[in-house]
Length: 455
Image (cartoon, rainbow, N blue to C red; front, side, top):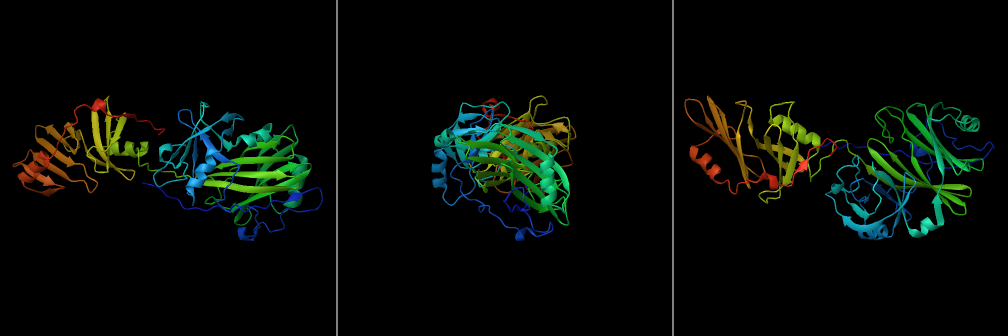
């Protein structure tokens, strides 16, 4: 079953420079509604000309996912200009536009770094092949020449310094700190970023990301619901997901550009904080949706195939598919999936439509508890066999519509013929069997994919 979860992002921004005076960042009550909080953030989907997110894989070309845009051609031309990438691992690597890839009606979705062939986006070429995957941001040559990666060190779950604690106590006197999530030190102490989540107050929860430079505090507030079912970019326990930063500093140190990503169970947010003089300007570059249960239209996901296979073989926990092949044998626009387990000599054929699997037939009979002979044709399958007291032959034609099974049952006082459990004449059964053409005898010639639970 495909799970579609509806949610929204409640991330209004309050960005204020606070010195060592009585200036305050938040004069609102902690229970104030999110609508009442001012925002300097650009509208969702705003185009950031300076950068874009890129994902690197060990075995595939780097990829940028395109969210649905009004002018896709213009976006592609923009992405062609990026020739450098800065990664989480603080590497600057060369990239080159290769091609545009059109996905299948699901542009802009990250799904736990899987099903890349489903995404709409831009494929790049690069010699950088990380061992376990990596991510980062795309830039032009001109940007890289005028900026460099800021040196940084990160303390996770760090304690607040005395000055930071005093700042929070002064400006958020009615809230209690739940945890200090991280402190990022930049350029040997020239600047830093720290993140704090507060305890819920009423039905609201607040987290702040604070950029500290020259004794001034620049605050980004993120509000969310105060319960575990919050739609506030959270995991299932209602905890705030702090940003992971890539910090770029101008060669003359006149400003910092803080690029960040923030991943949660249901979302992947990409953005930037631009710090210059006495202001900090936020931009949300993109916000991608992640599903928990995703139905690929090009290859079956492992849990669906595993479940369908288990149902076909009467819930046997000791067998599982080892490999599968996806094809359209009869060219009707509906794919077939052939799965097999070499160790147990078991094989099954499924209809694969809109990401869903439906069993045509397999070489095992639940009724007789025995293995059957199994013949695959370009337009259907025929199975036959059984035990001494009961023999069953089944004809199943490939179809984009409802699956129809013709069955011959031998073992009672008379031979019975059925069409989807409705009695028919022998001639109708024989006609269906005669329509099976072009038997597939060389299964080894098929394009087999290994079944792994990481797909």
